[in-house]
Length: 211
Image (tube, rainbow, N blue to C red; front, side):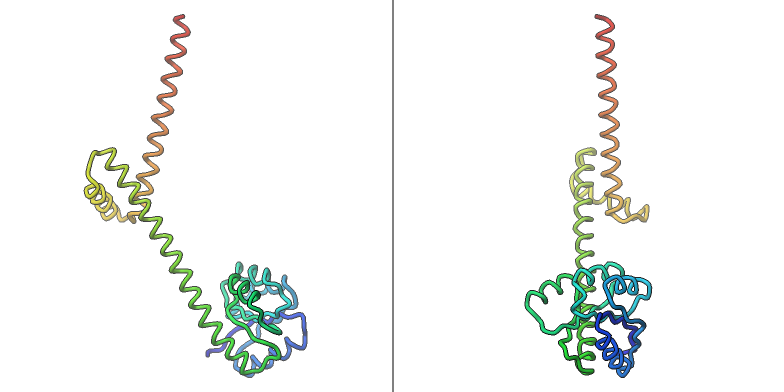
């Protein structure tokens, strides 16, 4: 494993010194040691580390706040692992665990595992985002097709071909073009509705004047 820039967060000075020595022996750099939640959040934001190793005394809310500042693998140092803790920590985003007392071999294994798991989680998140974007794009295209079919009186295949052709000719993604078609239709309908209400008001006023 290449040299990592690591932030340690622990209220226990002995744990910080011990872990710092182990990490340096493994060839890594401890860029700073924090002692509470605010330090963990601020130092992660300012220093953009490769890893954060955090004592269990730091609550999981701190983990969440750290990850909001910077996407980074977090290893939790704990006295024992409870199923409830693991489930909650996994949900928050903890990538690995080390049980006290910590040995140099333990911390090395935890770093390797946590980094691999973090990469998998990041890849999964990207896949989820891509899937959501794809679903949204399909919905927009389907809605735009429906508007063209209704407005132009054309079949579905022709509506799709027109969107595809405009997208290619104007070098605009089909989803963005479809969204523009939908927005244009909404604005057109809104304008028509305003004109219709205005005409009705004028008609009413003329009727009252004649009366």
